Image (cartoon, rainbow, N blue to C red; front, side, top):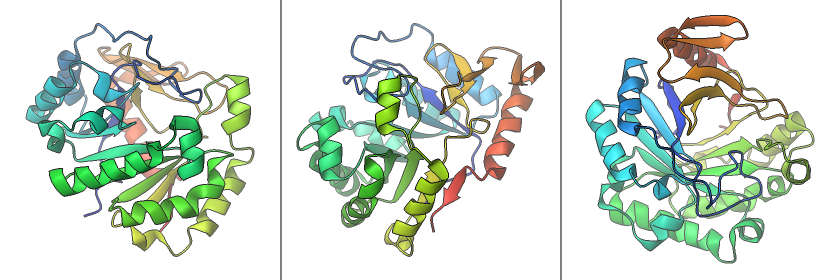
Length: 289
């Protein structure tokens, strides 16, 4: 069943910027030295229900490093919201929790095919990710998707990567254009020099191959920022920018009114509904099928 690319009213929740890794390209400047936030995630989850959120995509940092992740996902399940998680997989390699089936699916992060990915994440990590996917699918009945960062380095690897994930039982692939982290030396290495041309090359490379995955393939063009809501680790609702511009801050998750544009404030629920409509209508999400 293709579940990955729903049109639910959803947001990305960066639970914490704490991570066991310190990847130079990380858009949220996460790392081992970042402390976990002190706010109440259960209260926030209750508030998200009030705002009409139907689906939460957890990210970070590394979600499985978050100390309250197990109790939080159980709480959110009772609230009735769908949940998915994006992970570097490191914690799951040491042990898969019995509650992993709470998630609609698990997304594993990749940054190129084997050689490119391992240069960034460590020798052998690419095959560890593929092996982890097989265990999640075969032993735990989990639907597994892949997030693939499209960068100047990884664009040429997409064909080999697709061959690998197809034979390991992945449901889908979401290609994501590199999101600038405003560190010039990193952005110049990973950033796409011509995003429209890169997406045209991607479509050409994968032409006629989308049916190899049950859930298909799509690409998110993050050169636009007006369509995807992120709840950051400080409790702010933001519209992230993939350029050198600063993220647009809508307000705090507890606010009764939020901004949807400079000098434009509406009720919090209306604000989220406005952005969700943009997301459903936008051409920033491209179906490669």
